[in-house]
Image (cartoon, rainbow, N blue to C red; front, side, top):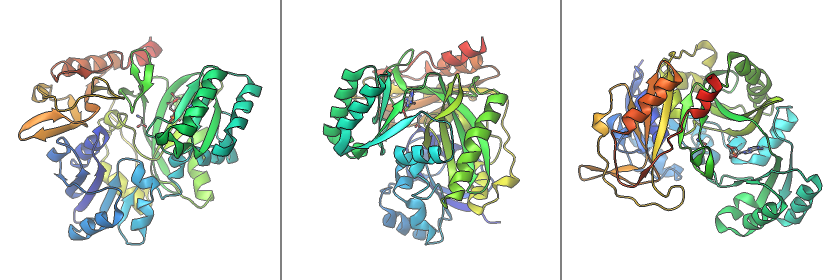
Length: 429
Ligand code: AMP
Ligand code: GLY
């Protein structure tokens, strides 16, 4: 069989991890990454396409005889890239526009879970013209904190956990007036607050069958001890000790299987990576959210232990025979610490010189995100700059390894959390 010519869309730490893993595939002929970053350039050819302009992508795909498009981030999927290329006989790894609504619309996801009795927080939906009713509703419930979620994609900025009615009313106001949130919040989900610990499970599905890839725990808040603003994710570790074999079986039985089966039954078979964000509550696992892609930075800790050829798994999904594959993982723990620009997730400076990447241990990995080359000098170009991944035969060893290597990398005004993995250690003790 001839090797595959693959176009990977995206340019963050997740896509560097994907490019790194895809480049190890025996099935790969050539990898292109749009737009990629200086890290992905070590594993393929970076190409600056507009990832929301599908007809321009199509021109490139024809020009370069691309066999397969792999989509890193959610936006092109929610915008229907899989449907666009389905008519054109180009394989796309990722769900259809409707199936991607599991991430693209919180209302769609909640209605779907309700229809299939998949455990999640109780909720009620409101439209922008009846936010007064939303306020009345939370008042009548009188249970705080309460969670407000803009229905559409909001880059992680559309979820508010409100401690009392005053905060709820202030946030309802903000959701109606903030130009950046207004569109995503034309529909609003008001949700019960779930107490517990979060974990993420990653599944790869061909629409009929699926395999669980791995699990991880993210750290979404900017500050130590999970305080401060929400971010894209400041670090992750895998596996998550809270995801015992028994818990994973329960998640599979109560959540993953009904999700894949339900989507198939509804006529929207889910093909691609399904990322299930969970809250492990005293009443068992419940879905916080679905995402239609790998997580970032979770991808950086779940691909290194994967022994399978990622491209082979992806091709199995595209060809509808994932059932024939067995997922094989190594026995190590992995910890990823994100080095960010001071000020992220609000405002921060760019253009700081990065040094020391070439001095990290050979079994540690620095995945690039907000970096760029200025002539031959590597400089910062974004909020989340690098993901430093350490491995070890215990969670503590993986954490130590990540931080030891992180200290070798410097750029001015860098910021990182020093407590990544701490929650996992507490669970183990
Ligand atoms: P989401 O975008 O839905 O994942 O929400 C972002 C973050 O808000 C989650 O990772 C949780 O930390 C928190 N969150 C969302 N919904 C709930 C909920 N119902 N109960 C408690 N925390 C929640
Ligand atoms: N790390 C969270 C996400 O990728 O959505």
